[in-house]
Amino acid sequence: MLNVINDEVVQQDLDFVLDSNVDFTKMKDSTILITGATGLIGVSLVRSLIWANVKKNCDIKILVLVRDIEKAKKIYCSMLERNDLHIIKGDILDKINIDERIDYIIHCASVTSSKTMIEKPVETIMTSVDGTKNILELAKEKKCKSVVYVSSMEMYGTIKDEYEVTENDLGYINPLKLRSNYPESKRLCENLCIAYLSQHSIPVKIARLSQTFGAGILEGENRVFAQFAKCVINNQNIALHTKGNSEGNYCYTSDTVAGLLTILLDGENGEAYNVVNPESHTSIINMAHLVCDKIANGRIMVEFEIPENNQYGYAEDTKLKLNSDKLSKLGWKPQIGLEDSYKRLIKSMKNTLELKG
Image 1 (cartoon, rainbow, N blue to C red):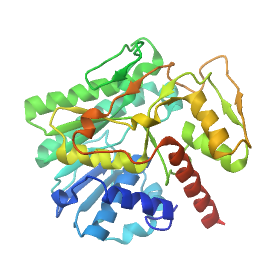
Image 2 (image 1 turned 60 degrees about the vertical axis):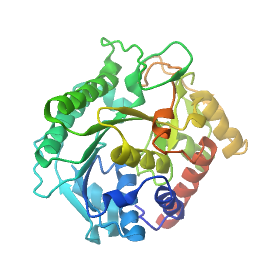
Image 3 (image 1 turned 30 degrees about the horizontal axis):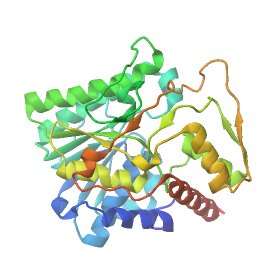
Image 4 (image 1 turned 120 degrees about the vertical axis):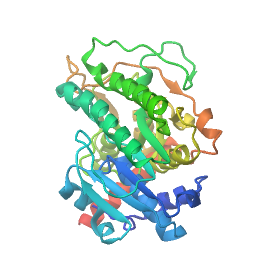
């Protein structure tokens, strides 16, 4: 696995974060805990904070909570030799015992695989709810300055009317559908955050993420963006397992990191913020054609392999289009569009393959 500086695309992304609106001086000499730190967003946050220490002398102490130490070692490699990065083995489903002071928490840990949501729905719910409760209890114990709960655009459910969805809009989720375990648990966790703010004065904010991807995706990543990118690299046609009518909302990794840090430092307690690039809204089928035509220059095409049952656990079709005005008012501005996101992702993946030989 590449470390923080071996991949030139990742390094450029880190510079993008440092050159964004985020005021890193607010975090100087602080301690931050990142959960879900072996996932794409968690890793990207950790790299960015290390880069802030390297380039801006922020002296941020970074604690990362992971279940799998060996996986963390493969991801962070030589970064583990640094004095500012500390790996803590633990599970958010258990009481979290950390001796050090903690000023900030960004809670990224969550089930992200649609297949897992179908095969292990109970674990999906409990990871969200019990894990978030334990993080909020830790924030109460440590008297944190700010906490960000990382939610998802899926919590909006199905919205039939076509309009830009703000943080005050909600759609329908059928609680009798198995696949609803993920969005329903996200809704409950958001309300749990509000409950802890009301009852225990926990300074918590909520980030509702669109689908995030970009350079530096992790080994084994198999979500739609990774599948499309691999098809380009391997000159294979894109096989869709649905008709591709769902309209997705996307955001490049460095833009999402800048958004999360903006919410952490400048967001209002008890408020939710959509983290999305409005210019990157498209349907799955249109994105597939974009990749085939613009990224692969017509070398590959789209095919349909739709199973009779939903064995892959995909959510029902939605026309959701998120509005990011609320976060933009805090100074955040996404920099990387959908086409450039794929170009940067694929270049980074090729760099990784070349280094592996």
